[in-house]
Image (tube, rainbow over all chains, first blue to last red; front, side, top):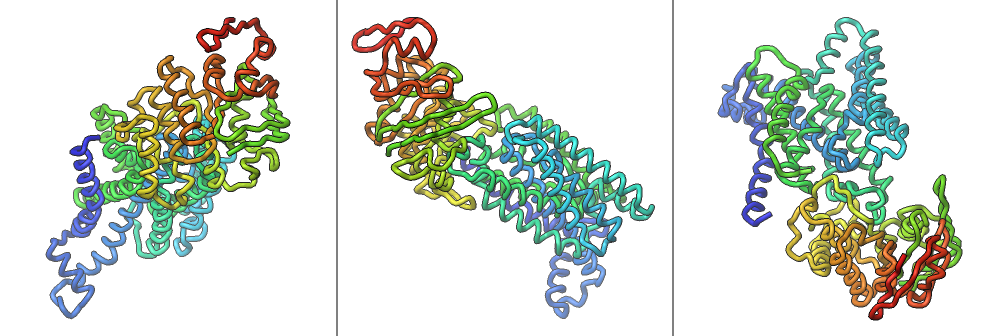
Length: 339
Length: 252
């Protein structure tokens, strides 16, 4: 890469890293009830010091604090979580096709969270059930496929079978759910941010933050773990222990995200590819940029849903419909090898 | 650093390796030869702890290899695979930098010192200027050199090279062997190389180990141990050694 290209890539990387901050502010003002940037600033100030801005309508504060802020924060966190999870798993399993869905993590988490919602109600945090069954699912995939890290087909087939099994269990849960719960469950499973509440965020955000911080610090190690196991071992890596660390972190963030927004399958697969196309394969860049780009894409998608349509399309459907064609166009246009 | 092997055993379902006693001297090049399936690579992987071995079977300067932690072991011994099958297209410098993993905590990043060690390793193998090239864009001969550079960045005193010249043309093959010699002489590395080319093995090594069916059948000083009768019994075929301008050519 020449010096000029290097500088351009660095500039682009900085742009993508700060983009979520701008989108965060824009997203707070977009919605069926528009709040101008000036109104947004006034509302924030009135929250900090109610006496300083008595003219701010109470509805602004309610919309901002109780509806938009948790929703936008959730979009950011989930986008970052799924993208970093995908990037890490692809490196770990040395395969660009791997994602949390293929490993059964998503379906396990979805089943666990649904089980919790139907039988324990919304008072009990669905993240617990989500995490427990995500661990069961990924554990089953890894155990059944054996030395799957070097046999992708075996891993893929086991993942498909375990995912199918948990999907069947999920259908069983749906069968026992009351019509009211079933409707909510159905909407949630398609991937939706509309149920975002502070209560969910209090649990999921710290879990996602812990997992993201772990993977951020492990990002260079992911380069070494993306070598064959024999090479990694020879380079001085305790392969089993470090793999388990990465799988634990990715399972944690995927379960925490899936438990509140349902399954958003394509994001963790496509975002890391987009990042590698633009910035190369080094995970020191791929991990933070995947987080930033994933967060940005989720916020943009949610802004479009909230700003353009009068009814709520589940974001999981929306992002798949928009994201996959974009990816295919990029794939065709980008002739260089980026994997 | 010297290596001592004592009662080393490793078994796959249809193959087992057994080496009773063997020692490799410091700063020497040893060629391990033998027919396909003789156990050369398995032996090398056992010494490199890429395959697990029992405690008390491998010692490096008196230290039991199986009792060492991954990072300690990697600072002593490095296994260089035959070929790297890359999934992700890292730059050459990022690739060589991975050789520093044994010096960096799992949660850490390479330091400037690590980057300098990687750059020096790249210089040593003659690939200065390749740092920003993508690993998929260089030739297979250059990729072998990059693998050796990564091993050099690891700064272990023992290098185990698994068929480092397979599929290389004669020019690149000679270049790799000259580099191997340079590593033993200038960097005092103890080097074990598995090979199929008997001429290259005898020409470029100080010692030779002959293997067959998972066992060592002969070992010793290369010039002395390289005899027609031994070659014929190891490879089960008629062979003739010819001296040509001080070099040994094997006819078969």
